[in-house]
Image (tube, rainbow, N blue to C red; front, top):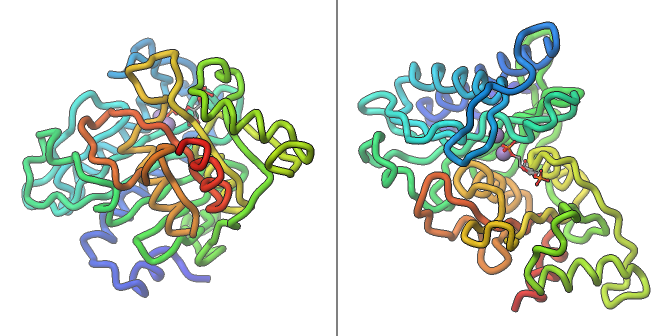
Amino acid sequence: MQTVQQILEHNQIPSSLAETINTVLNASKDIAFLLQKGGMGDILGCAGQENVQGETQKKLDVISNDMLKDALKACPAVAGIASEEEDLPVAGNAGGEFLVIYDPLDGSSNIDINVTVGTIFSILPSNGGNPAEEATYLQKGRNQLAAGYVLYGPSTLLVMTTGQGVDIFTLDPDTKEFVLTQGQAQITPTTKEFAINMSNQRFWAEPMQNYVADMLQGEEGPLAKRYNMRWIAAMVAEVHRIINRGGIFMYPWDSREPNKPGKLRLMYEGNPMAMLVEQAGGLATNADIAIMDIQPELIHQRVPVVLGSKQEVEIALSYHK
Ligand code: AHG
Ligand code: MN
Ligand code: MN
């Protein structure tokens, strides 16, 4: 079986970028090991502090952030990093070619109930910019050189793109290598499965209200399909389901915090997932334009997300026109 290193070589990925990706993967293996220790280590529960977005940090949010940060700062190819759990960007190495932006632990409310979580990463060129300055990082998702996630579930999986399709790797517990288990994954263009946090329904804008109401009407409604619904509360697991069997995932704008568009963050959730979804033949939008075409204004900026099977996302978009 082919390892991730062999695939990177086969795809002629420059060694400095491969080294950066490997640094993320090595840290993620350590995170997977720690997660498996669960209640045996002092790693569950809250850290007793909040991140820049006012969210209570779990101990594992902090630990996994530090593991990635320490590993990446020691990687010569990394100019700088930005993380969900860091208020400000962190400078790496002078002469480094890449910026690594990450969500160290996505779905962290799932940790304490032993349900799937993941690490999401996005790699951008540093273009010689000052890695201590936020402006250096504010590049459109289209600039991403690589994006992916590591899913800590029953198996530990890596789902990654370097712009040549989406490959899925499984962490072999014996050799500790990620080996290719599904090459060139494609998202089925149609679906009867949607994912949205229905408890926020009354806060959504009218087009989203109308679309979901029509889905709920099933065969008798205008969409003439009986839909099923899923909500795992971890974007990483929702996107993984969609890559495997199609679907539409939405975290739309809502009126709870009208000045913040939705809950998910553009630079370390929206953009990397959008690159994966587009590379697998799906669509990823903010209900208006492609997520990767949005010009970021802040590292921690939020974005409404409507992504998944191409034809279903087009239906969702038609309600917003
Ligand atoms: P994080 O754990 O990194 O803060 O992200 C959680 C996100 C996302 O993964 C998930 O889709 C969403 O929050 C769930 O939100 P609700 O709790 O509002 O359903
Ligand atoms: Mn997240
Ligand atoms: Mn997180």
